[in-house]
Length: 244
Image (cartoon, rainbow, N blue to C red; front, side, top):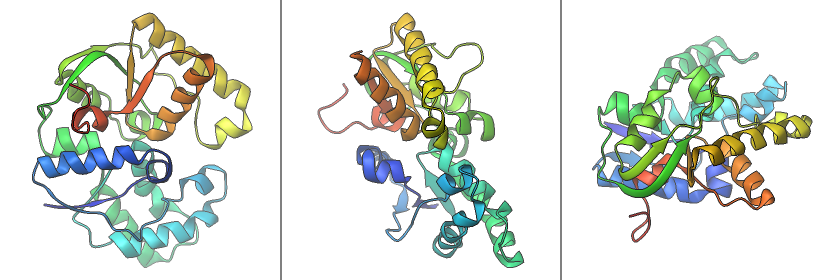
């Protein structure tokens, strides 16, 4: 099995440690992977802002670079959800649409790949502390990933997984351009999530998406609340000397 990594813009530019942790984990598992350096954004920002035609160049570059990939792996439910819907963009030629539709199911979010494709949840990780998992809307509502990240975290030695989800698994308030257009609502939603985390006694927040991570981490820092926010792969494969 050969993996081609699709690294989100948020990871590349703002949290490269997530990409490095992913590389450590894949190397530890002895998997064959590559990172195509000429990849670009998945096009989601333009699509979510109501400009689907502006996402076409990103869709076409993705197709050119990844069309022959056996599996495309990404540490982001948000980007994978977008990659799977690229075939629906208006303005694509029929051949492009068909090729993107065929490629979409071969794009996997990391927890989906580890649990459902590899069939593993225990990677020998150790992490002391009380960790809460925050669902990202795309991973939860579009990809249907509920148990996969939680099973991975629950298998980490020393980690106590606490529930701070709330009954509806509410959004963190980021939502891409939503946070820009409706900042008051976005901040109120973040504060609600942070209050639930405090009630649960969580010292660490784990997520599948760096966009949600940065939103909650930034709001916690603004409020002066001690909270460590990590992508879950940073817990599965911390740098040497960290975590355990």
